[in-house]
Amino acid sequence: MAKDSPLKAVGWARSLPVSSGVKVAREWTRAHVASIGWTRSAPDLVDSIVLAVSELVTNAHVHAHSAAQLILTWDEKCLHVTVHDASPRLPEQRDPGHSAPGGRGLLLIDALADKWEAYPCPRGKSVTACFQAPASATPGATGPE
Image 1 (cartoon, rainbow, N blue to C red):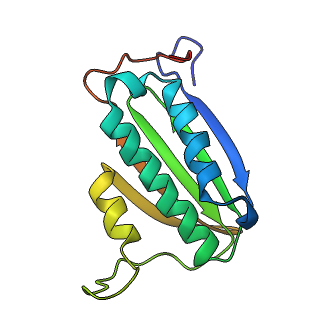
Image 2: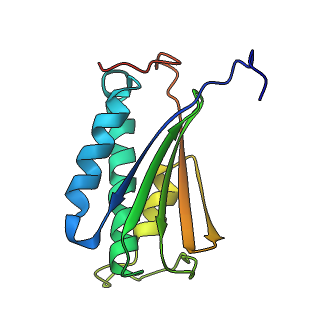
């Protein structure tokens, strides 16, 4: 990338062992999303992002029986939420039916995120959900609110 490129990006990463629980992932995510200014400008979007993180990390812990690596990347247009786990099996959307107690995680991600994708990696897989910046957000904000 050229030195004078207008693209700026910031990212954060955290490893979450199965024993850490999903609450840690939610709190960590909320704190970092606050640093880009969305807590005030788009609180409903922040709630959607935190819920998506909760679902993705839960999937890594429950279905992959694996620690989760949570990566947030903000490129001034989109917040990319990536969760990596050790299972090579890509997630599949399914229709769990009305009486099933679970199985709605990817349906929820599909409803919350602007787009999402899952892809294999050398040591497992990653699932990335992208959330576009709200029109009212201040582009490029990187300090705490």
